[in-house]
Image (cartoon, rainbow, N blue to C red; front, side, top):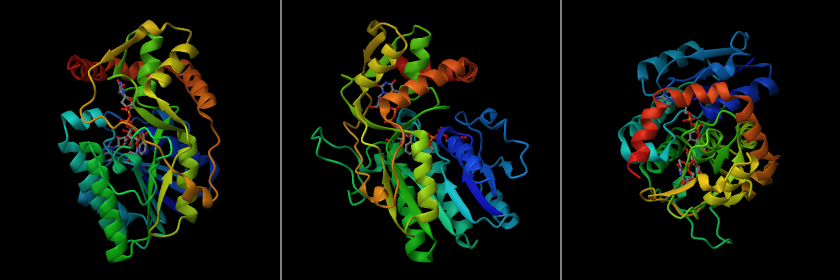
Length: 338
Ligand code: NAD
Ligand code: DAU
């Protein structure tokens, strides 16, 4: 039985990845390592929690002793590293935890993995490490685009990417780095644009759109991201970087309008608010390299967003519980400034 360590498996993408891998590879034992910060919850894994081939490990990736102990107990074949502080707005007001988790935490994992004879360490990074593009539709991020992160979040992710690269070059650790565009889908935490819009529109609350709403993001369904990581983990060239994206560019305003229309509500709910500091104009991925490996996305944006809206309608309990807790204080703090 192959042993797969997934860090951050209680979060949005890591959680979907755990479900995806459990379904596809019943002969893999999946270890889900997560600190359960505000962004992590295990209710999404209720159906598999008693499976013999699933284990939850409650530790902090920056806790060297605990991480080393885990690697002494289990001989992992693969590590897929999602655990991170992931929200740009939070990194602007409180950057320190981003450095601790995203940079130090990654280095602790790399140290543990380098003595452990693993087959592959996949570091899940982001297109934001490349900085921003202008609005020329012919310009894209490729794997050769220089790293020019603009937010504390993307700077912390770029730093972790460089550490991963260094552990490959220096110690020969078999790594891949993936850099994906914006994800959406089930269990997306409602601080991010799409789930925030869905949850607020459903409650007839105003939707805060930063600046003029013309910033562009390149959206990918989370399950398409999962299939790409699966492919890279098994077939990616060791040491390689892979960009992941499905050519689904939309302005923020287009995204918000699509959701409002899908829910049959009024565009009067849109409220333009002060812009995000250092707000990147546009992201767009050139996915040719991972396409050459055989990957194709399954979801087009319209189908994916319609299914996601349905999922939020059918799973109100999940997000209503989140937005009624400490989230409300976060929201009031974050948007009072705007
Ligand atoms: P998320 O915020 O939903 O989940 C992060 C998870 O990491 C949570 O379960 C949290 O409890 C856990 N975590 C945080 N700090 C930890 C620590 N110190 N030790 C152990 N666990 C810890 O994030 P997400 O949106 O699912 O993103 C996952 C990864 O994918 C991140 O590395 C992010 O940079 C990357 N990424 C995200 C997107 C996106 O659109 N969301 C796109 C590209 C790449
Ligand atoms: O590109 C990949 C990245 O996508 C990931 O690395 C990050 O972890 C993930 O959070 C996401 O970053 P963004 O900053 O692009 O996502 P967010 O949902 O926060 O914002 C999307 C766009 O919507 C961005 O241009 C800012 C805007 N926005 C966001 C919020 C929360 C608004 O206009 N209003 C809002 O309230």
